Figure 1 (cartoon, helix red, strand yellow):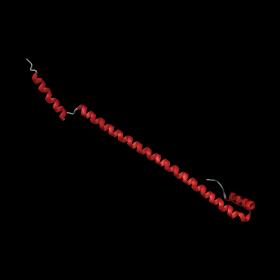
Figure 2: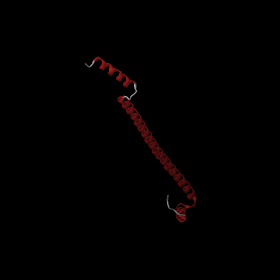
Figure 3: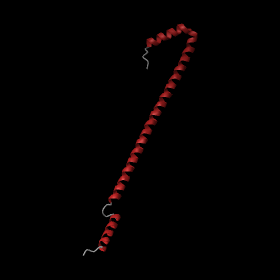
Figure 4: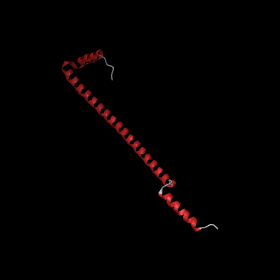
Length: 112
């Protein structure tokens, strides 16, 4: 994350030792460590929350796409059923009843 080498850490430690003195330096280091830990936990919790939201959005998008695909399948099936019903396939009951009514109508009007 930060590009800090050993020599830079040593320099910061020496400056802190001179400024704070040997009596207060351990307490300051402990306090700094606690703050760094809190900041890390905060960043990790924010990161986890963002990842959960991204995952939830992705799951919602997948479910939405699956619902759309299912509706398309249902619509295609309904369309095919309607077309099958409208076309009256040969051999179906509706076409047989239509065939039986037509000859009867022709018998009533005999040709001379």
